[in-house]
Image (tube, rainbow, N blue to C red; front, side, top):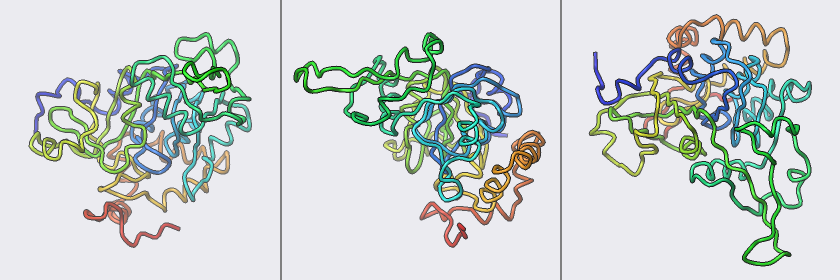
Amino acid sequence: MVSYPEIEDKLMNLGEAVERFIKSGSQIALGGFTITRNPMAIAYEIARQNVRDLHLVCHSHGQALDVLIGAGCVSRLEIAYGGNGRYAPTCIRFKDAIRKGKILFEDYSNYQMSLRFLAGALGIPFIPTKSGLGSDLLRLEGFPAEIRKEKKVASKKFVISPNPFNGENDRVVLLPALNPDVALLHAQYVGEDGTVRIKGLSFVDIEQAKSADTVIVTCEEIVPRSFIRRDPDQNALPPFLVDAIVKVPYGAHPTACYGFYDYDPDHLNLYKKMANDDDDWQVYLHEWVYGVKSHEVYLEKVGADALQTIKANPTLGYAVGLDRK
């Protein structure tokens, strides 16, 4: 058995990571985007451990967001967009929760949410932008006044201010920084020293991690120091920013992980069908979340043939010839 002494205190399984760092009421940032590199394995574990009253903050998201909302784990959400591409232009359980008033919801633009995480990463309390001027994003608010008194919630959605360098007639929007309790992200590689490497698009994962109090990284592989030192410009996060490391191959399934596997069209179509009906949704939860004791059992349930079908071409990074209908 391979040992990794430099990260021994950070290596743990999914259950340990959730139990130690994610509490009911936590503000959680989700890495990934729509159906790419979602931290699915840990999202399932959060649902299995019955964590409740989460406050999710995402620039845009998809499958993990929808599962957590549908499982009743989320009470508040700040986001620009939630969707699963062609399989759900708007995430199904997310849409249901908004329509039925099951969660509180505050919307920003994609760029605005990215800027808020950047402000948090930079350690500044707010960040100026022109984004949103003249739009309903600056007319409508989703959070009531009593929630804005809480520590991790901005006292105002935004402030419109004169540009101090250009006079009263030039206005800017001041957006509050985000500093979530925990950032969850799935990466391709973590080095034996704890360095994180994300291949392909990183979205806002790096800013989310730098802005958060705690960072949990699930990964496909733990690799030697010699590998992680090769092409150092591809490394995303240094070891000191990471609090927990969980090795979970296919930890983003049914979303894609560039270079390792594509998204799973069969499972996403199954999800789309079952998430659209309240009774079928409960069946899905019990079959694919609550009734699955571990990630290994989950992969057995998905099946070796299905995993082989979505395996990525090592040169192109995605599955060639995959039926995506």
